[in-house]
Length: 219
Image 1 (spheres, helix red, strand yellow):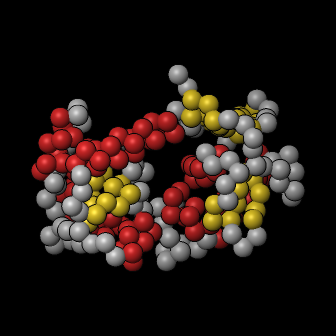
Image 2 (cartoon, rainbow, N blue to C red):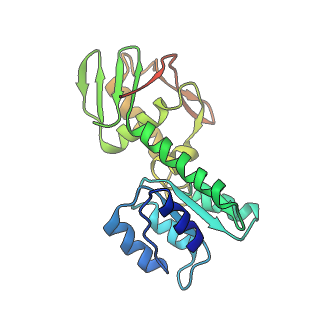
C-alpha cells in the first residue's frame, strides 16, 4: 500500500498508515479519518474482523482492498459495512479516482437539504421542520429519515437499511428495529401516521419515500 499512500499524498491527502488491526483501531479513534482503506491481508487480526469492529465506530466510507475475488468474500465485506471492494492488483489512478468519488459523495450528502411538501431536512445541522415548525428526532431517527430522503422513490429493504444506517446486519440485529424507527418517524412528520403519505411500506420488501422534490445543496 506504499504506492497508494504516495499517490494520495501527492494529491494533497493526509495519509495515516497502520501495520495491524490494533494500530488501525487506535489510529481511527485518535485521528477521526474522512475515509478508510482497509487491506484484508493483515497480520494477527483478520481484515474482516477489523472491518466488523471499525464500522460501528465511524460513518465514513470504507474501501476494502483484497487479493480474493470470491463473491462470498465480497458479499461478507459489504454486509459488514464496506462501501467499496477493490481486488488487487489494481490501477493506482483508478483507485485514487474511487477515493475522490467517495469523498465527494460524503461532502454532497453532508451539505444536502431535502425538501418534500411541508417537510425540510437539513443534514449539516441535523434539523427537521414540518410546516416550518421544528421536529425533534433521535439521532438514529434522523439518520434513517435522511437516508430515505436521499433516495426518493427508491425501495430500500430493511436489511439494506440495517447495513447502511445501523452498520449492522440481520445476524446481529432484528429488522424489527427498522420497523419501529419508521413508526416513530411517522408519528412525528406524517399528517396521519395511520395512513402515511411520505414513508410508504412496500410489502415483504421495505420502504420508500414518496417525493418528487429535488435535493438542494447548500452553497
